[in-house]
Length: 378
Image (tube, rainbow, N blue to C red; front, side, top):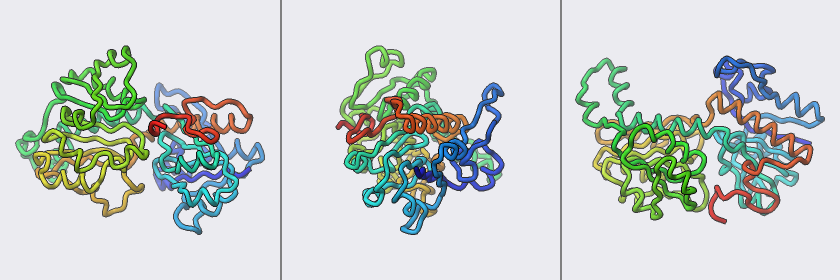
C-alpha cells in the first residue's frame, strides 16, 4: 500500500539535529539517538525502513500547495496519510473527493482540525492522533507565556537588546501571578495540566469553562471552579488561556463581542488553535486600548500555518509598546514530544497493519462516526 507523509523542511537545524523527526530531512529517523533526559539511550523509529520492510511504498514530501503538489498527486491512491499539526497538509472536502483509496489519517501529534473530520466520517476514513504525546510540552509553554506577559518580559528583553535601561517603562506593566484569577477554556488533558502547574503560584482563583465538568475529586485536587457561562467566565479572569480543540463550536469563539466582557488589562494566551480567536478583533483590542491599553496576547498558533509575513498578530502591540508574545507553532513539538509522537505513530500503524485494536484515546474518527468528544458535543 502507499503511505503518504506530508512533513516540512527543517533546513540546517534538521541536518544538525537528527531528533527533529517531523522534517523531511529526518523522516527516516536515526537508528539510535541520545536521550535528553537522564542521558538514556532510546531507539528513534525509522518509518521508512519499517514500512519498506513490509513491502509498502512510503512517500515523504513537504510539497502540499496546489494541484501539482505531491500532496494532491499522491492523495488519489494513498491508503494512509501522515501529517503534523505544525506545518499541516490541509485535507479538505475537495481533496477527500479525490482520495478514493484513503482509509487512515494519522496526526503526528495532537490536533486533527486540518482534516475535514465530517468528511472523514462520511467517507468512513479513520482519523487517529497520538493523544497525550505533547500535553506536558504545551502546558509548560502556556505557563511560560502567562509569566512572560505578566512580567512584561518581551519589552524588557528588547530594551536590553537596544542598549537602553529604563526600569520604570517595564515595571509600570509588570505584575505577580500570585493573587490573580486564571481561567482555562477547556479543561481536558492540556487545560487540566495547566491548572496543576499553576497551583504553586497561589493564584486567587483557578477557573475553567468546559461543557463537561471535571470529576469532583479531580477539580478538588487543583481547587478549580467551573463557570458555565462564557461571558461570566471571562469577566472574572485576569488571565485566560485557551486549551480546547478547534471545531464548529469554537471557531471564532473569542471575538469582539466576547472581548468586551474581558477585564481591563486582561492577558490572553492561545496555544490551542489560531482560528479560535478572531485575529482582527484581538489585534483591535490590543491597539485601540479597548482593554485599558494593556491587553496582552501570546501563543504559538495561527489561523493559517505557516503564518504569512504580513499576519497582523506578528507585530501588533498594545499602547505601551508590548503585549505581544507570539511565536511559531512549536509548543507541542519539543524534542521530548517528538520522540513520543514518533513512537505513537508507529504504534498506530502497527495496529492498523495487523488488525489489532487501537488505543481508544487515539481514535478521533472511527468507521463512520466520531469516537471522541474532543471536537464538540456530537
